Length: 589
Image (cartoon, rainbow, N blue to C red; front, side, top):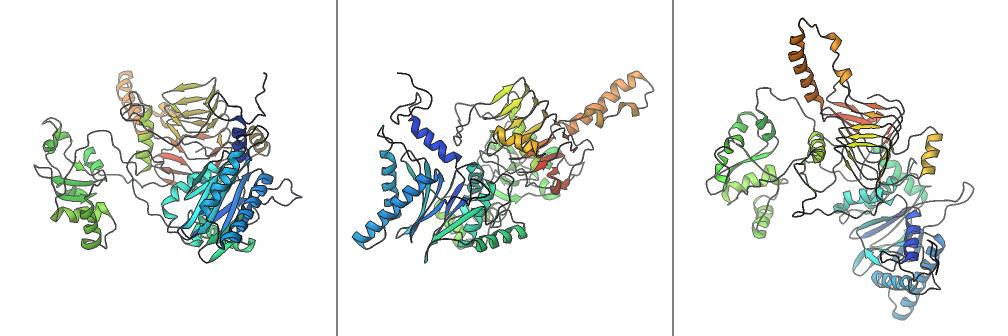
């Protein structure tokens, strides 16, 4: 029997083992306005973006009160959400009438999931095209659940659904560990910050969002606009990036995402110091005895203190030829303790200490058996912009120092379900291209292009780390932005991000007395210039908007610059385009 691609029968399976109509219903959730939920030990906050069909109409209601202890935020078909919220309200009333107590949040969520799942079993029904974030408080504490059209439900610490929700999820993942201990006010602020991430070029105001709270001693209610606007004004005036202060510290290279806007300032080093000493001074160093026990530990020593930390590394298994090349034993910042020893150190011996590397480990070395383990595989500290940039671009080398494709040590990441990258008449050399990108008649050399990136015609990318985007802009959105003279996410037509050797070396200025002199000495100078500037070009952070005919070459060789008002920094000679920044057409950096 003939079927078109939009099968109306909910019991029809896709070749991938999914139900067509359930897939379409879940797509409706993705197209809806963003909704966000967060919970702490005592409170749950729900937030959503207000959306109206026209400027003349009021916005559709996306947050509903179910009972004094439960509320719900929706994304998708508002009518379906209204029906399900009414069902939830009736279930709460019936339960209270029968048992004279409030319906537990988890039980209500299960009943809601059962109701949604029934719609996937009958050909004469369709799934509900709405996702629900259910927040509530019962005897077991605060809860946040997500119910999806398939009938599945999940409990979360924080979650976001709807259009451009990935940007909010990125923020929530970064702040995840702080939520359980957050105060009511900080939880609301985090919800507002996450909500702001989903707004494309729009200003966050009390009229563009709705916030609701439920908590200990506080019935579920929606905050009035004046209260919400006061909170927005508070963190905008303060210039905050998050409601809680975060201590920045260099981290080791692993599978976590690094921000391209927080860097250590690199200062020129003494030219008489060996390269090995320069690197060693950035780490915690240790001395060991023949048994491998640590006898001395120094955090980032300098000068004579650094030279005093040289050891014979042959005791760790290095050959007599290798040991002199590696005279330092550096800490990777990974510490393994027996539980009883760790508790004793933290509670009894050093209760006022806050840092393992600079306080606890150096003290523990004096009266505990602290052993060193030699790790001889790939490891890199990515605590600076330069090390972050170099480590990432090193993945494009052949063979790379670190291989994500090694079957013995596989890497796993969150599934994004993005389409393959589309490439149209492009030149790509020694590069890594992520999922879901659009590349049109451009050149990419020795660069990494992140997810959802867009490179327009005649773009040249060289020695560049482009981190990608959290969400897509549709063709109509891009056309509207260009027509209005604005810049869409991605890199615009005829933009060049590469080293300009002609501007760095003007051969006309050389006084040449002999062709042979120039051949040898001029070539040496040119090579030195190339070595100084190669692979020190550009990092483009998430959701950056770079216009047409832009040139990013740092032709003056600037090492450090703070130009955040113009959308970029320069760190260690690397130009960093900030997250969500806009670089206007024709800009020359």
